[in-house]
Amino acid sequence: MRRKRTIYFNDARHYYLFVFEPPMRLEDAWVAIDEVAGTAVDTFSYGVSRGDGLFYPSNVGMRFGADIQPFDIVPYWRVWENMQSLIDRGLDPLQVLIDRAHDKGLDFFASLRMGGFDGFEGDYEVAKGGRGYAHEEAREYQFSIIEELATRYPIEGVELDFAAAPSGNGFYLREEDVEQYAPVITDFVRRAAAAVRQRPGTAGEVGARVYPTLEMNRKVGLEVDVWLEEGLVDYVVPMLYSCFILDADMPIDWIVEAAHAKDISVYSMLQPYYREQAEPHFDRPHPTPQMMRAAAANAWDRGVDGLYTWFMSWPLGDGERSTLTELGDAELVREKDKHYFLRWRKEDDKEFDYPAYLPLEISAPDAQKRYEIPFAIADDTQNPRLRNLRLRLGIVNLVMADKLEILLNGESLSSEICKRTYLRSMDPYTGQWLEFDLQEVRPQKGRNMLEICLKERPLRMGGSITVKDVEIVVTYDTYPVGRTD
Image 1: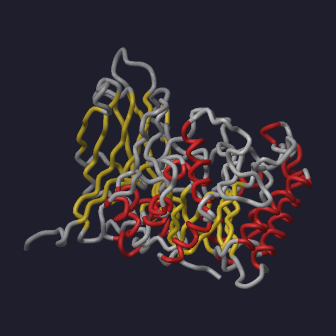
Image 2: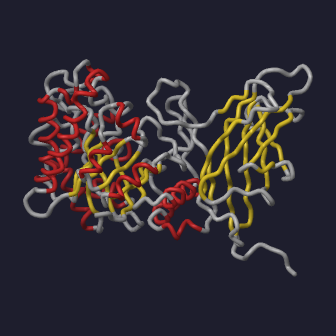
């Protein structure tokens, strides 16, 4: 049965067990729950594994850190000592969180990464040269963890995290085993679902993190369409762990349609960053509230049943809590300022990724060739309270003498006023922002098409231009905008 949810995920490590100094106070142990309590978040998802150990005292698996003592780095020592400090006082670290979640009115899901076999003897992981779920032993081990979580702890359900690969852990099958063993993984999901749903007492729910496209799932042996057709899961979260960039236009229409046909919920993942940061130990920028609203509005417009997010700027402050409150209701973001932007594709086209249209390189002038960039927005651009609507294009290696033709849904923007600024302050010579204050030619609610043509470059100017950024900025006012007569 479909259910509306607002879900926040904590991976147990970065903003929790890695951070606090042991011994862990109960006030510290409650932080992961308390920081989202009182917002629209009604469901807490907790990552109980990383692939090399479990973040609770399991009776069937290895606790994180048991095999790497003495510890070489501070965070790993803290994980062990924080959990141990609770255990020494007769407290189960996982149960402490579950109880706190229930005290605050939140449902609790244990999220288990499916591509790693925590402490299991033998090199069964694909990343270590094994065959993953082609090994019966590996499947049985993972099943034992799922069964333990569902029956030993009073949680609302278990989330099967298949989307953690390839960055969080390895894939589930070798490429040469996918065709033969994809049905075996489906049978594993079938069995896991039965164990969670048929546990003693109240039936549990089963969620799954999967990839955004059907092709990506099929490529690595995940028959998500079959899971949905058979009703093996209660919800799905399409996402890609190797890309933490917020995407307001993730291609999830197929999964929404297939899931809803079987009364299964779809929760849209709002990833936590605006840009990647290549250098280690430097902060990656988080999206603004306007960017989060834009992604949320597009997701609601596609018919999802709720939103799912994580890794917000920590510690969560008033701004983050305000955003988490807005995410719970499509009406709360409808007539508020938004900032849409398009994500970039990965530099290496061999990386596991789904399509992106930027950066777009236009290698040479050609008056007959138009380059298409599709995008979507959820705002009604004829709304009288809409004060301003701007299209921003960030273009590298552009000069004012370049002759561009830019069309929006087939209409030229030549009549719209264009303002230019430098692309970046640190090297203002590299490119320009073209900012159009759209008055006559406006995007429509839903799907849109931007077309760009480089018609001519000035004398002695060769080389290409690259469209790096496409953004739509929408602002609203209290009063309708219009004439006074």
